[in-house]
Image (cartoon, rainbow, N blue to C red; front, side, top):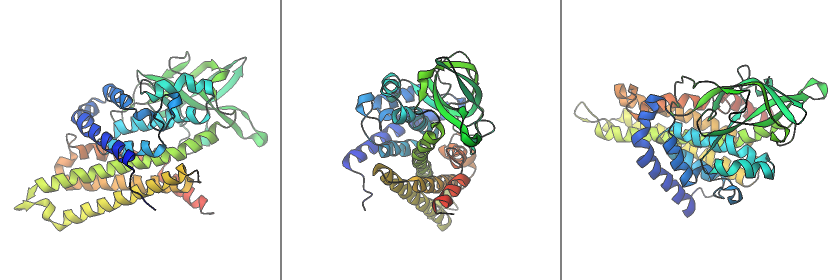
Length: 382
């Protein structure tokens, strides 16, 4: 078993690391404070091909794999999570459902702009009354001639209201199965469709330079051809997308955890207290050692999950473990980094202040920690 990166993978990692430090780090604090979406950084990531990393060249992608995306996410999140989640959601939730389940015509229509980062896609699953319980979907879509008529709402949807958002794929009840169970399908809704309204941006604790909104559908009509994948398989399709996304979120979490270590080591070597650098004190050394152990363990977890996925083996349990372990590591490291920085860690001008605000959502989004434990236990036969 070898976890060493190939020459190509290391080149990608180093390129994104350089971009994060040279392009993102100097400006992201101001975007964050203004709660402003960084269109220029997104355009630069698009030009680098990051939005097309796991998508074939046939549709404008880079022809890489999902692990390549994870490497990029880790390096971006070492500097900032708003930029990282914009990429993660744009690829795993915006483009991948179309890539995995779309018709050739749908792929040709939507993917080139999404993989170029010129446009962003979003996925509307969560509703005000159903987050972890996604089966509690209430949004409906009925066929009227050759059109779907959609009614309902979605919440906490990333990349759904930017100036470059081109579409949102939503899950909706399209009928009823035997036994009274809901038939849930996925339908693509282009931005600007009459009857589709996007709310103002949420006021969030973290991820302040990313776009998150609530969506409303009031007799919104789209062509019947906008059905994504098989009718009645929308929920199952998204669960498979979510499994992949959990590996990506784990990678992002590892990046935040590692960023906390980077900042803490730098500060421990500069800050003096009681006549010496604070890094000379065992209390600080042990705290940073614990942080490094968490990040290292979490990285191995998402590497292992990605390896199983790329080999075509079942990876649901490993993805849940990676997401659980990595999000916990991010939260714990953010707390410890803030403690090491003391009062300065509570100031937004320091990266660890952002890291602390950004970490908590990683234990919630794309399946809460409790859901991950439930999945792991279920896959153990319990």
